[in-house]
Length: 73
Image (tube, rainbow, N blue to C red; front, side, top):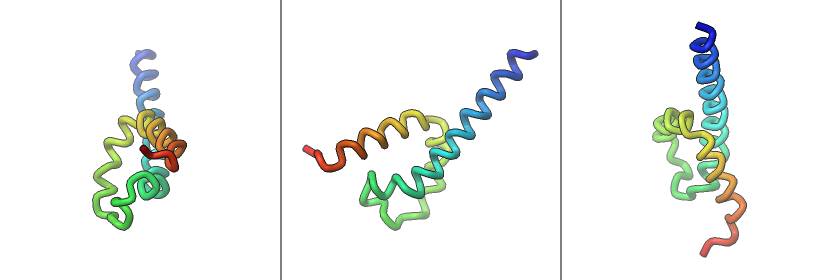
């Protein structure tokens, strides 16, 4: 029973971190990464579940795109 409780707690914290990343990305990052998303606020809540699940990838891609922002081929 302790293992199951630990896994549930781990999943809960993973989703909490995903929620924080989703909030930051949807408020700050999406306009900087994708200029065509500027001003389109209706679809942003639809992205929250996906960002919560793949937040490590979202953070990685956000960091890479921010770093190479001025160096687009």
